[in-house]
Image 1 (cartoon, rainbow, N blue to C red):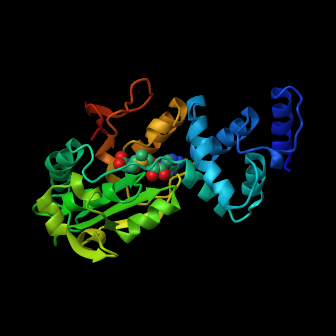
Image 2: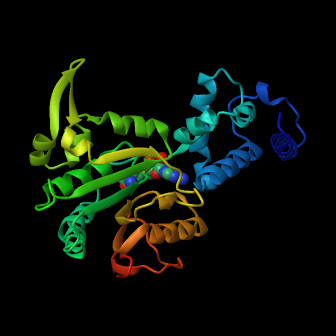
Length: 303
Ligand SMILES: C[S@@+](CC[C@H](N)C(=O)[O-])C[C@H]1O[C@@H](n2cnc3c(N)ncnc32)[C@H](O)[C@@H]1O
């Protein structure tokens, strides 16, 4: 057992009134000390801040992983993750606890703003440039619905296709989500939120194992590059600044200080005049930043 966890264990023993049954024989309950140890680890590695109310979520999601590995307790699993030098177990643990809910054209206002305001602004800004480039970033892209919706919006915008070098970077901390995103295959149910006209234009349909499956077309797929990237990375490595960033329904899992650091990194990663789109339940109120407020959930780096 690691030193860190041994400390957590003795705290838990104290919590349980001195009852010192070994971790591996306890049922899959998560003690206060175990919850705190995982919460601290998750915060340190991903910025995700788990409140006490998320204890049950942690217990259920990690409980499944623990059993699948034949381990007997949260304590053992903590040590197992810490001992893995490859870092793969940590990634798998973060995969299990992160919330990945997403959908095509979620919060449609942002796609409208991209089409009607962001793209025309970029076109105007580069009027006299020969090598016309447009760069977007879907930060926290989950299983790909957001970056593909962005790609489709770019392809639907007149004047770009064939003339502009367009790229959308799509990043997430979850390798599992990135694998799904790269596959680019979706069900009927998943595509319910996308306009039918766009589904017929940008997806090809086939049947697999009696189930209908839709694959994103190469034109949209080629615009998107998927990468694993932790938003907590201190120095962002991007050479070219972005014309827009979608970081929606990600910051909601971070505390205020982490949000502030992140928002300021986004500011530096954007072109002047570039736009930041955040989720509808998120806001930059109370955060120290230099963005210009456009409307709820939409911000601009001043020109
Ligand atoms: C709820 S999903 C949002 C997906 C999409 N942006 C949307 O609004 O539909 C949040 C995503 O953020 C990712 N995430 C959480 N913490 C992260 C971090 N530190 N770095 C990168 N991605 C992170 C999760 O893995 C998850 O896929």
